[in-house]
Length: 265
View (spheres, rainbow, N blue to C red):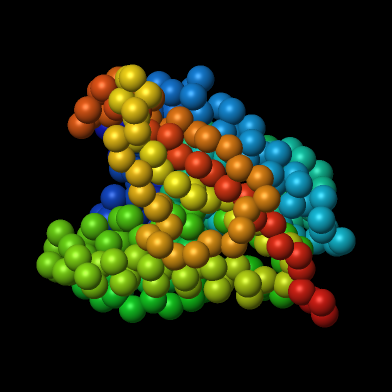
C-alpha cells in the first residue's frame, strides 16, 4: 500500500486523470500485474504478436499510433521503433516504468490524452460523445493504428462517474457506454492505414470446480469487427478477487485487423 501511495503522489498526470480515477486505476493494474505475472504474461506476448501481424500488412512505415498503450508491457516497442519513423503511444496515464522505457527511443512519443474525447464534459455531468482531438496525430498520415485492450474499457470510468455523481439512470448509462464504443470504432476507421483492434470479446467467471458462474459481453452488446485471432486471458486468478476469492475471471481476447484505405496520403 505504501508503494501505491507514493506512486499516486509522484506520478506526473493530468488533473482529470487524478480526479476521475484513471491514475488510481493505472496504479492498481500495475500492482495486480505484479501479483499475476504468470497469468498475464501469455496475454502480453499474444498482444505483441498481434501487433507484429498488423505491422506486416503495412506498405509504408512513417507513423504508428497505439491507443491504450498504458504500461507498454503488451507492446513490442523496440520492434516498432526500428520499423517506423515515428511511434506515438497514447493513454490517460503513464507510470514511471513506462516513461523510462519510452525514453530509451528517440522516435517514441508518449501522449497523455483523452481517447474518448468526452471526459471534460463528463466531469461536469455531460454525456455527449465527441471524437477525440489528439495533438500531432493526422489520421490520414498514420500507417498503422492499434486499439490495445481499450475499446471495452472506455465506458467504465465515465459511466461510473456519471452514475455516482450525477444520478445517471441505468438505461442512459447503457446508451452512453454503447455510444462510446461505437464512437471509438468510428474513430479507428478515420485512419488511412492498417487498423488493429485488440479487445475483450467475452468475460467468463468460473468457480474452483470449473463451473461457469457468470458470462457477459464486455462490448456492451456493440458488434465488434470479426476477429481472426483469439486467446483466453486469466485476468483475475483464484484468490485475487476482493469480492470472492473462490472465483476466477477469464476474458476471451480477439484481434481484428483490417486494411488501409485506398488513396491514403
